[in-house]
Length: 196
Image (tube, rainbow, N blue to C red; front, side, top):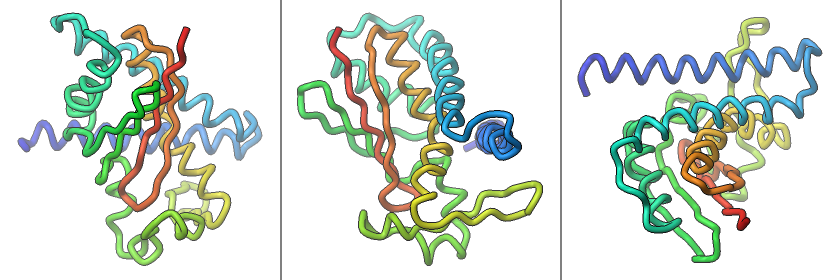
């Protein structure tokens, strides 16, 4: 990885963190309901995904089917945005796809510190006990535990869900994208295709 790529990746990670922090801080200050944070972040990601997929596919031949589109998302799209391919793509051939990234870039920095490793989940049972630290300019540290972690993880990864949904939308596929973090820094994105 050259210096330019490292700088681009660092800028993307910092921008993502600041966007999430800004939206979350706005909710804390009462400017919006906290439930709208996920929607706002997801909508931002949706628009970015639409724009990126237009650029990435302008010289690409048409896709044969839904599976071809998902393969493109997992290989080319994911590599362009996150500098690696999806580790695993699974489908039930009925419109549900699971994209597994075992070392998701946006969670890698968060899980790299020693304080995170002891609390990182080893499987789905430990998921409820995950403790994360999000930098907060007012308190310097905000440490959610228990049930709050599901909400914060969704908020932190909502932009990425929107990114995938926006890309698929511009390729003519209406979908619902959700995320689950089972073992830091890995996560699974579930894409449910909506038949029209």
